[in-house]
Image 1 (cartoon, rainbow, N blue to C red):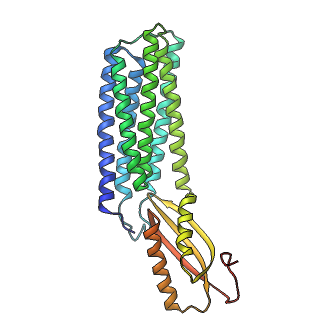
Image 2 (tube, rainbow, N blue to C red):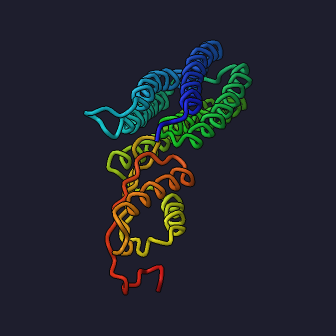
Length: 300
């Protein structure tokens, strides 16, 4: 099933907007960190720079993954999404570990100071923008079943939570706990590590052909159950190819059905699955003859 042009445009629009916003955030937080003397905001700016590099690679992956199938790649290029998502997750983990080491060294050496009050509105603005981007990107990723966009959405949510942690540290440092700015930076590192692990785990599952979620298989079973000629659901297999599902169905039918009827039944069933199961890509159906006196599991 070919992707709708409007869906492709929506994914591209979200990816481009995300790139523009993260570039602006890197410049903004870097400037605020320099003006206020906040170590956490300095590190936050470096995190945004890392995000910009990772998302640039992700954008290239999105463009590559939506290419139509070819003779050499008959199932398309959807798995490029998993590779780029894996790169994003690993980049987040590497950046977070470096970020944490940087702050531990400064705390150990006593290199702490309270940032100026300008860091408070600057951090609030950063958090608000990141949260808005999370809501927009998660909607696009969910509607298009796009792992890269979803990963980028969670990266924005992580940045929003990081900004709030930095805000708490800035306020606490202004109240006398000068070490709180660095402590907030350590909290940000832990949040980034958590997000990176989630993204890496999902990407690895996709590369290893994890099965479709239960709700997708249930929708397929409902469609199959509406066809009276199908007497037995012998085997359901599925895997994710980028933003679409590949389904492999082995079904038992009456042994008296003609080849012509079996061909019609295959076409009708695949059409119904495309109509009722979102994000379905390839559907493979094979039929196994059942004796007339055999009772399938659904007829018992």
